[in-house]
Length: 223
Image (tube, helix red, strand yellow):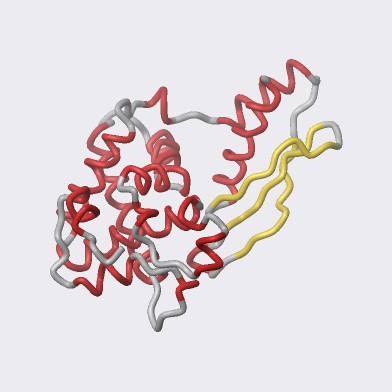
């Protein structure tokens, strides 16, 4: 695991300061004086900017609302987990034995955070242009078709239309709670239909959690 050459090859970037990549790959459970949470915080902001600028250029005629929806569909835990898996990032993360035995290397939250930390580390050492090149290349490899139709899905609207047709009512959304530090809050939302919970999901914002829960509910109701 101390050989990062394969990961660096996938990134097409070689770190000069190896401590940066080590820190980016160190989960807090590993109990070192450092972990990847600060780099994750930075990478999250950098990726938000990179993807925002990419979409701004790609869709010159789209308004802010549409661009925000598309960005939200890419800049989230599931989106970053997809990119992390493309890099096989799980193979390189430093974890505690307990976390490893709990399938930590496959956890979406852990993979997503490590990916953000890696991009934060690249940004620190090489700047925005290099971080942008790496991120967009991965994004386009994982999403061969980046367009309005495939990415700006509003699952809440689709669920509302379905439940009105099948149940004659619309679902309600209930906040079950929130957790995590202020810069990395996670919200859990439940969807209630006919006094029954039909789906639950977590997200970095209430809106993201609602959309994820609505997506789950749609799959359940359509099967």
